[in-house]
Amino acid sequence: MQSENLIDIHGLNSYYNDRQVLFDISFGIPMHQVTVIMGVSGCGKTTLFRHLTGLKKTLPGKIIIEGKDMGEFSEAQLMRYRRRIGVLFQSGALFNSMTLYENIALPLRVHTKLADETIRIMSIMKLNMVGLSEFWNYMPSQVSGGMKKRAGLARALAMEPQVLFVDEPSSGLDPITAAGLDRLILELRETMGMTVVVVTHELESAFKIADRMVVMDMGTIMAVGTPEQIQASEDGRVRQFLNREADPQDLSVDSYVKCLLDRRE
Amino acid sequence: MSNPIQTLGAFGLNKIYDAGRFGVFLLYTLRGIFRPPAKFWPVVKQIEFLGSKSILLVGFTAAFTGMVLALQGYYTLSQYGSEGYVGAGVGLSLVRELGPVLSALMVTGRAGSAIAAEIGIMRIEEQIDALECMAIDAYSYLVVPRFIASLIAMPLLVAYCDIVGILGGHLVGVTLLGVSSGAYWDGFFASVFWSDVHMGLTKSVCFSILIVWICTYKGFYAGVAEGHFGPEAVSRATTNAVVLSSISILISDYVITSVLLYS
Image (cartoon, rainbow over all chains, first blue to last red):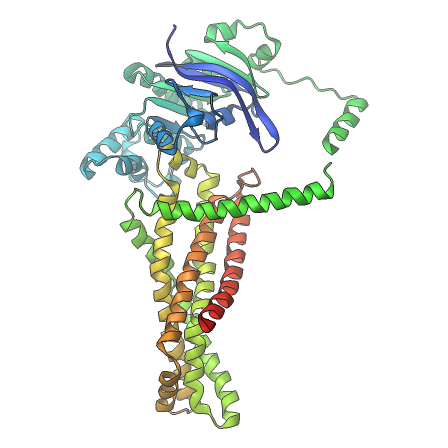
């Protein structure tokens, strides 16, 4: 399935102080499709996620969103972009001092002039979408991890975003709840035509929801393609990731001494 | 491995960067006053937290400070036959110095630490990132209500602290030690002028800005400089917030007193 790209990334490099974590990342995120960015822990997925959501500053020319350069966004443009996206964080990132309903109502209260009753109905509808309408007046501390994540998704959908970014939707969830979230993501794509970007290292979930996959390793992209293309990849590192094989360990004395010397430097 | 000069240079640059960020933080906070979301109820809630819930602690501190001032004052002044000036001593000490400083230190310990911890937890749990991703100005939402509430609550707390302290001094000086009530109040009203009250209230406003500025800043950037966002980042931010606020209160107290006394 070929589709126009909503976001194009061109040669993105990223640093934390002097340490480079992303190396020349380039790929496109097609409109109305689910793009899954996957890779082992520490491969730079979350850093890329932070660039795409505007939480980490991007240099000009590196991320183009519908023809506009994200690196040259003014603050007002960044705010406008953020009103069009929904973000589900790994932990749900719900505000602990508010009920689930108040969490979902917050963006509607800030960004719209809707009446309180309308906001209440819309918030309950979003909670209903994720199966939590009965828990609207619960505090985040009173619900389970999976429920927090679903409430986080309801909040991310509150403003009817054009693009949904999801960080590790399945991590820490039981298989049934994780499958429910996967189904919800697919429904959002099918019923609302939403563009979804998912960052995950859960293979089963990734292959179930992806229209397009990006496999990362050590800050670089190893492979981009449809799930079938990724599954058929001959690349050794991609195969190792797909087959869940551990890195071979070199236990010789020479390698141990070298490792110690490297650490001292 | 870097040499000592490099380390010193990096340390200096870090501090300059931190100072710049600290200044920009205040500018963003001031800008946030004029940005959504609406702040009336959040400000009321923060006045309750910063002010109302500090009343007991500040009152307790003020009462015993006034009592001990009267006791010490009586002991010293009675050696010169001037016990009547106990009211003046208690009043001037509290209105000019101890009222604002003690109230500020108590608010820092009780509310400042809680502010730093609460915002620090929001930082490490990605709640501040979530606010930014929802296009909500985090300064306007998190810092401004506390800033305005502190500006309203602190002068009131200081006035309350002064009154309770003076009454505490009266209790010990007049009721326990036998100073005449008329002499106590005469000494007080003859010595404490509007300029002294003005000095105390000016200090309370400056301290309220310092407390909220430092405590919210430390919480807001908990773990950011270090690059890791664990619970220790929150504990460090809270400790630093209380220590830095307390030191800033004492230093600024000296500076404000010098400026107001000799200007």
